[in-house]
Image 1 (cartoon, rainbow, N blue to C red):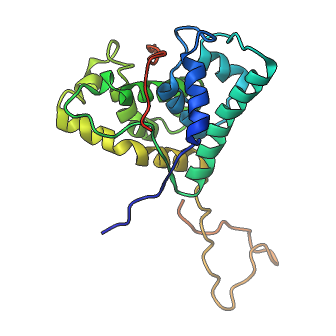
Image 2 (image 1 turned 180 degrees about the vertical axis):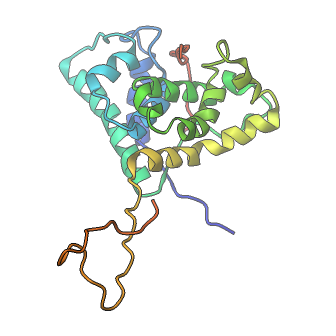
Image 3 (image 1 turned 60 degrees about the horizontal axis):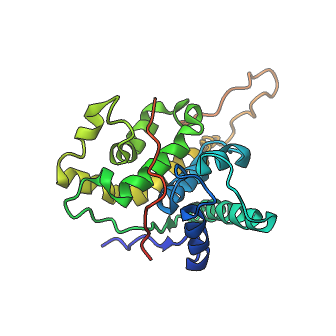
Length: 239
């Protein structure tokens, strides 16, 4: 039997509480992401094929500019979100799955109406920050790996009802949910880990050195849309 994959929280409970309370406060607008959606959003930014600057993702996360009480509070909040992203990169780099803030059990509920759906909507919001990079060079593979996130988020229900139908069956919906943690690692490997270079074929004993004495230098043999916003404030978290 395969050993279970190790998981790791992206922030400690105290830090999560600070961000949760800030996102639920009147210092941010009602359309700001809640802690569940924000967790998914930051994980997508950790996996993203190219860096998205904070000057772009912070306004998307908060849906505007928060009314910080002090420069110190702003520095703390921004630093914690950046730490969440950095910890996600570090965990995935070592083959460790980020610990999610909810249980992976639907209990027969529509996933779109659960914290799992909010988290997936937040993740897809992170994808939409640089959709061209996510789908530009590996569109088919990316679409396949992102399909569970897309279906569970409910983001595409209006423009492509067939995606929503994939989770109409409770068994199929739960199967998609169960795939989410390892799909994070699969996406990270797809975008962040370069493929191994092909190994050169060994030279036979006595073979001429390529490019020497008029012999041509040869190559080594070797193989080689519109979206609804994620749920705003009001989500809870598993602790």
